[in-house]
Image 1 (cartoon, helix red, strand yellow):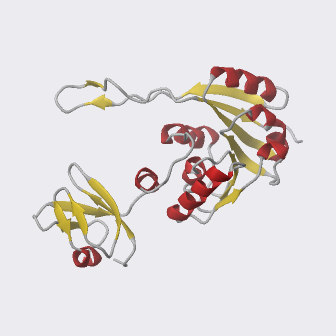
Image 2 (cartoon, rainbow, N blue to C red):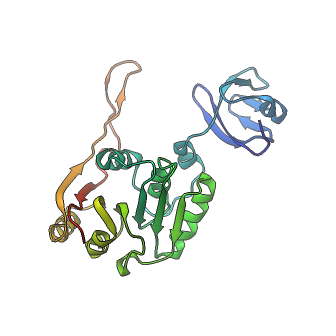
Image 3 (tube, rainbow, N blue to C red):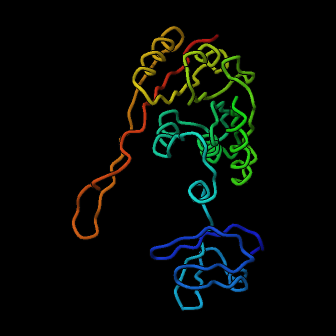
Length: 248
């Protein structure tokens, strides 16, 4: 294993995302750097107390949960997954995203585009600074951040998907329509029903196949008895999907 390579250590009730090349103190003992550098992904490593950890290659979700900095409220994986599924995104798609916030959605989508690209717009310099750092941590090279107000226009043309998670998305609907290719999708994440109503009204002027969905996920406990968790993050927001069916 190369020094400074990110490694995920998975124990029974604990996990750590670290860089190879330095000792790490865990609840179950110390893992020596020399042992970690000799290990391989998929193998096992022991602490000085004999406790075992699986050595794994971190996924984008591991990076997000353990390494990313967070500023604005983020769109969660359950909703990003629905965006990918409902739009049928291609590996070489061009995606325009706004506002970037901490960059979670841009980075998650870019991770599924090995031959594609995400261009993300953020007008707030505080958030763009956080997003730049997260993009760097992700290691992805197919995310481009623009410090620009998308309500002033979208430079990219023949776009496959436009995603919006910002205030007053209705102001961007016309720009999105012009930038999308025929068959392309506009997806709006709305935290309030009042915003859903405003966006839907703006969408009907340009788009067809408009669909509003709410993605509710409920985790269950299965250790001793089988039942839903008493608390959890169930409702997050609404996703509005609209498809461009005619030329601009």
